[in-house]
Length: 378
Image (cartoon, rainbow, N blue to C red):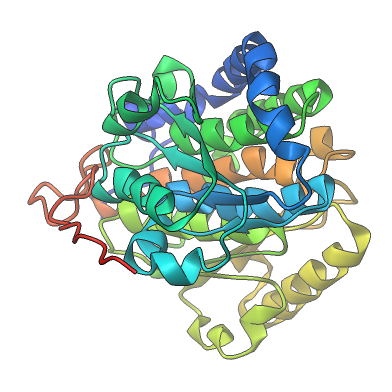
């Protein structure tokens, strides 16, 4: 293992480090892009959202799927309609199970490149299985197949995130948060105050990144990320980032605050570090803070980091005060920077090549080797 580096040098100027640290500025660009397209977006969406039977399905693969997992609960609550997060990998493998109800559907596809085999296949099977489906494509690559296929379709709208959000590094960082922020701004118009708060919180995380070094100083063999509601998806994304950027040399796990006790807590031992993303909702936060206290009693205060939007900070708490009045789904955009920075430090400490953790090609930036089989009739 390498010696611990100062936070300012961790990542060695890698693309991954640059793409993590640029995010607050990129989020402001996202808000400007959505504002510029507001008229066209409203013309496309208003007739669809006027139908109370409309089902919204958020889809993508890997980190792109987790965008939907974060956004779905909040969108369902705010829009007062059915919103489901269904990975493209599930849609392609089981289209008639995942799209069993032939109701008007808006399929929102998230993709960094749009070149993963399942990205196009998911939209194609939706067109086959459903009588009436519209497509909102949110992607980082204008030249990707997904964007090109849907660019001129009557029932499709392609929204591109800022050019620099199309990560050059292996792991999705800017692309993940840009697509998450995009769908929130598109389907929950307004959001100016939330974007400003999230950007300030992101800058606070980056300014305080020295404290992330404490996570990897102990050299944990295992990292666990927990969160409730929309923050469960952020926990899942954070766990994947560590797994990817360390090339699997650090084991990871994610769960909800309540779900963790039902067996998965068995992963915790003295070599484990835990990050808990704490909800802004006092009711939900009560469960998050219960598991924080329980785990600190088990493995020590310095082995559990609680990332919070408000409240008095005890040892091991990181309070991002800019998020004090922001709903969890918006806070998630800033919270995930903590997971990304933990992953970056863990990657350097593990000796992995951060921008290319799998030089052998065993795991690829854009998935390869997937054969899309023809969907039988009937």
